[in-house]
Amino acid sequence: MKKFVLSIALLTVAVVAFAQYEETTTYDTTGSTMQQPIRPPVEMAWTQDDVGDFSDPVAYVHQRQADVMYYHTIWRTIDLREKMNHHLYFPTEYKGTWRSLAQVIMDALDLDNPDNENSLRLYTDEFCNIPKTKDEAKDGMVQRRQIEQIDPETFEVIGTIELEEKHQAKEVTYYNIKEIWFFDKERSVLDVRILEIEPMIEYEKELNTGDPGMNAGAEDDMEAVAAQKQKKRLGYIMYDELRPFLAKQEVFNKQNNAARLSLDDVLTWKREFNSYIYAEQNVYNDRYISDYLANARDQRIESEKITEKIRTFEHDLWEF
Image 1 (cartoon, helix red, strand yellow):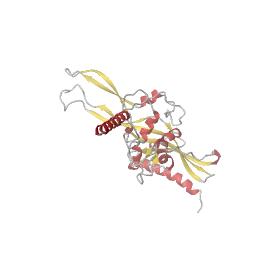
Image 2: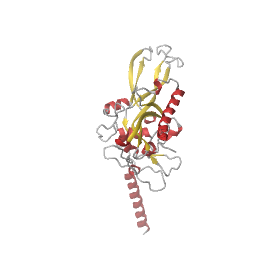
Image 3: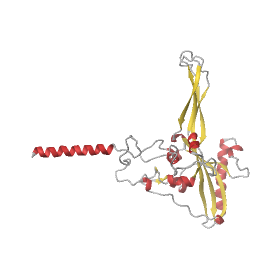
Image 4: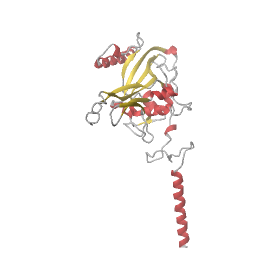
């Protein structure tokens, strides 16, 4: 009897071990042999709802053109280096279900899958009417560098090699957004809508400042290489096309982590970010503040003046 019970126990252990092995070595249906996750990321002590289905973009209030008695178009920059904007920059890499705004955009673009018809589109200008091709968009995500080949015996330059480095989401440190402020006389409110958003990549570009043929054998006298900060525009994104992807991504809530918001809530409705205006709609059409004010302090003061002008307009509509 004891042998029979022991045999049953050993058989049960073998079945459980085999089942666990089968569970942890499941593969996807695309033919990939990489080990796939067996469950969503474990982040909480209770059953977590599927964050991909928890929300859809909240629809705008229907706006009639006849009710718009005033509008003003401005361009502003969101600097992710500012502490108030860190919830849009971090995490710099995947952390469970958390992704940064830049990572959400890059995943939505899906540049490595040209057959994805539902991917996000990049446009060539701020009016978002001429889309970029997948090849054009991928080319903008690559940094090319020329490296000289040196003969190890004569230390002479014998050729060059072109290296391609793909930009990462953590290199997106700025966003330029175009938005329109308008007064709706039907609802008696001053409202704002974001029209387009433009990710800006900041990366270091190496500049050769020395002669590679001079004293190349000495470690201290090798070619001097300096790094200069460069900015690159990835392209323009129509904000209404981006919102469905933003609505499916949660953001860390510093006040109460149990009451998380989506990126769409943060950017569209609560506008929990700090920024400064760098241009406004004017008679010159494409003149930036930096075109007529060289000093950075004066540019920031001018930005505040434009903001105050919009506030003053709303204030003057009411009588107290």
